[in-house]
Length: 266
Image 1 (cartoon, rainbow, N blue to C red):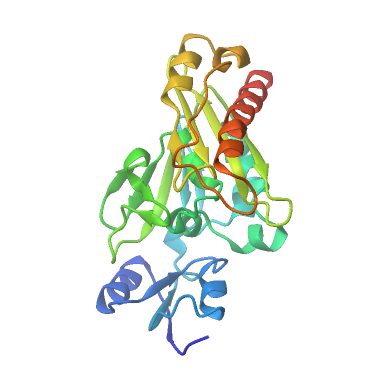
Image 2: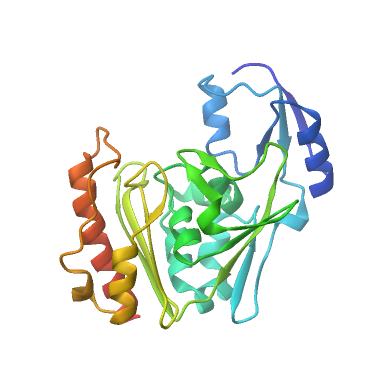
């Protein structure tokens, strides 16, 4: 690990000021990716700004129509939240399946979304539910937030404060996971808002994406057989030691059907 300066922010404004003052400062949320990258010398920020004491970035609240979750809320807190389980059980289930117990007890919603790992689970929920990302500067729609592999619409001095998830009529998430890391080789989040359906895929491509043809078919009739015969092209899908693009394309259809079946049965 290279040398760096450590700073524990007092509040959101303090963190933003510190971040803006340094050209290559990095925010430390749960540390599940950044610390590992620094140990491997794949990341070498001059400043690390720790958000653990920023209380305004924590918490979960629901008004029946929207669930708002603070960026520093940990995966385990989302998974066990009474508010989330009542309003969007699919989101709680997704959070309960992230990584292992240590990752869930340390990793945060904001950290995961800002990192935008192509195999991360949360981007599927953020896009699948049409969430809104609130930062210290503005609100960003989910469809405009994720811009590419490990890339988002966040500016260099911008910090995620919270994410607002609209409550769907029903929803579910199904993933084919790496048995060791539990990262999604392919994960599909399906949300039915009554007349409008969103289908978001993670793990398959460089960045989370929606499947418009499935959304239209499910809006007409929300049933597993509605997506039969709808295929996702293998072009531009990921290829690594775990799966090739053709297999990932096949898994998108399989996971979509499983998610739809779960949502119907819920």
